[in-house]
Image 1 (tube, rainbow over the protein chains, first blue to last red):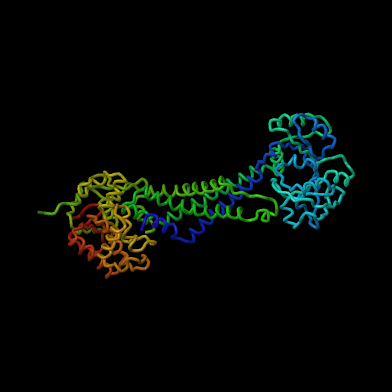
Image 2: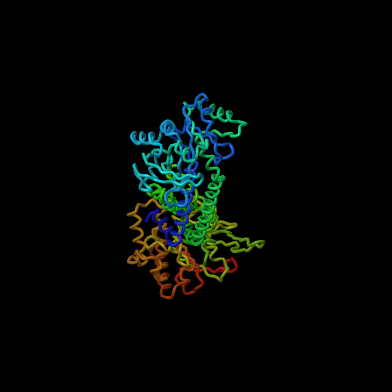
Length: 381
Length: 226
């Protein structure tokens, strides 16, 4: 027998309790990791080079308010601006589906590769998209989901405009942070809706990252005190603002994470206290035959730590395996495209488990340290 | 030449505090115990015999007076030194056996040796010797629940002996045993004293058990009566 096997036998002496303890840690850490990954995915700033040069310009009132098309030449004349494209949400439903399953945006196809440099699309497909006014390109995820291929025709009925449009799929793209969208010609949209002279928002590309702050200020000032004031912001700020429409999700998720960890500490602390209290007399015997306080503390700590870390292995490891090798897009019905359990999140999960193991062992360890051998031997007598 | 004293107790008192009340468990005890002696402590419940045994064994401390075991003033050792001292010098046998239920008889006996520097082979040899001594070599792989009460107590005696302590303390070791098992256990303790030269101090209520000892002392209300 070794000290290690002695600790292991003690930890597993009540198999049902050990299993339930491990599972409670595992489930809680799985939830914690899931929440942390979800929060990260929601607040993840766009990291591609294109995002560093893009500015989103929307109505100052709300993103649902449209902007006049006449703003385009004004923005184009601002020094540092390289390109400006309208970007209008069509809200079309596909086939007989009741709700929107992928977003469609009308834009200027000539500027596709200028604005979205990270977008991958074969040259021929891009050329076909550019020359056919009824053409569209579709993100790979949506194409895969609906088994769509180049050359197919689709029809979308808008939920906000009086228009039902037919499209020819000219290409299937990938490489963007959201490969679900469909992009088509703004001129086609204008024709179908009676040329309203409106756009949903503008995507602006600046010539260099250094131009970004100045161009943002200039755009905001250009339309200040007009009937269509705008809010120009970097792509990252735009996305965070978009998320903020859900409420303070960071605070909400953070609060849930805190509650999960706190509850876990209480449950684990209580379980360890019970497990040690049942063994008070045995621990008194160990003290009598020569085990010192620090050795008993090490036993308790190792047992608590071991159970917590085994729970972490199942919970954090399970989350890692599920989100790495499973199809998160299918699991979340397309809400999340990626769901990356980063090394940092794995580390936080393991750290929480380690802290949990230590904290849960403190109260029983203090009780055992304070226990006299004589009083311990009287326990349950 | 008379054997040397292994335990020397002078003017030893122990007072417990229960709430606002002081309870005197031992009062002004002086006692010498010789090496190799099988001393039995008798007395009614609450007479202080277990308290005296605990102080001699170093698991309780006196309020005043001196208790020297092998010339070591046990009360002056700190917690850590006391733990080491107990491991090397004292073997414990309890009324309720107090074996660890998840460990086999072999592993229970091996437990005190985990604190020593012996390697696995040396530990195995000592455990087998101790189990052989109590006649349980063939039950080494059994868990405590697979043993009878008498066998459990014999395993506990093997655990007490495995570190070769000079002093074995037994607190009513036959209290939970049938008469045959009690006889076996007392026979082992007597053999330890007579042939192995161990000093055995046993607390008992039973005059028949006390008869196995080489000397019996009586306590009443915390004082020696003979």
